[in-house]
Amino acid sequence: MPMFGTSCTPWFGITTRSRASSRASVIRTTGSGYGYSAINWYSSGSQDRCWVAWHQVMSRPVESFPVHRGVLRGVQHRFRTPDTVRVSSLVMDLRLLRYFVAVAEERHFGRAAVRLHMTQPPLSRAIKRLEIDLGTVLLRRSATGVTLTVAGTALYDEARTLLEQAEQARARVTAAARGATMTVGTLADSAEQVGTRLAAAFRRRHPEVHVHIREADFTDPTTGLRAGRVDVALTRTPFDDTGISTHVLRSDPVGVVLRTDDPLARRDVLYLRDLADRRWFQLPEGTDPLWRAYWNGTTPTGELRDGPVVRTVHECLQGVLWNGTIGLTPLAHALPNGLTSVPLADMPPSRVVVAWKKANTDPLIRSFIHIAAAIYGGQSEGEEFTT
Image (tube, rainbow, N blue to C red; front, top):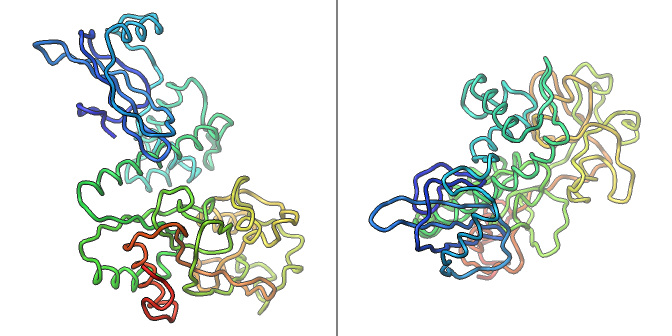
């Protein structure tokens, strides 16, 4: 997100460009929980300017207010440096953070480069630059890929949050400029399973609405709905639905993913007890307990099965191929060569749902729910939901 009044690239940090003059103003904008602040002052008769910008948490809107020169002197004195030199060497732009998140999630520079539509050498240089700026190693490199260090894990969580905030701010600015807009959260295949007919029907009903799609990984079954990042979600249950309403669009029986050379792959049906000695995928700590337990083949109060932590479908499938780790999948899913799925008789189905906040009375969101329910839920529009 460019700073106000400039065309520079997005920065998190503190930089200066020239000496301050006698007049200043503070501009504060707030988003949903986070915001950006900037001090911008101009010298008379010239366009010399100095920026001091930083990323901070703000819990409520703050009105614009003047800042006098004495305050600026106080800022300069606090950093004990002239205002013509850089006062912080820790400057990270969103581009570097996006590169780092891609490498962290793919665990491989080559795959991350493909995902980012770039070649590997500049990506490697960018990550090395980020490590130099931070003064710490973020990734452990090896011939087979990369793993996160402790510092890298900490940055990964923070970087995802910052990128989400930037994406949310951009979406809001775009919405203000274009008019009606709606953000739909999706989880892995949920949009593909119901998206084609739903998208066509929604476009016919609301051709003027711009729809933004936000895809989440397995760590958030609400796809950003609970955090307020999306207006409505196409996802799967079960998860903690406190404050959230859902409507089931379809139910998919599930099975276990196995290599085709696995002895159990020849069975017509399996039970959870048949897999007691196998290593299962786990979702990260902090993930919704109901959701985490379901995909681990246990209960929220039961003991989690041992196995590697995964966040994406790709990580799951590669884990089965390379290590024989097992996990669950809807039987309707197509699997790559070398993998197969066997039905699990004692696992409840995975339900694809449309989800929305109970307190949301936006007519556009209600219309989306009506259309989805009419197409996939066997209900006519307006039968259950009111606008």
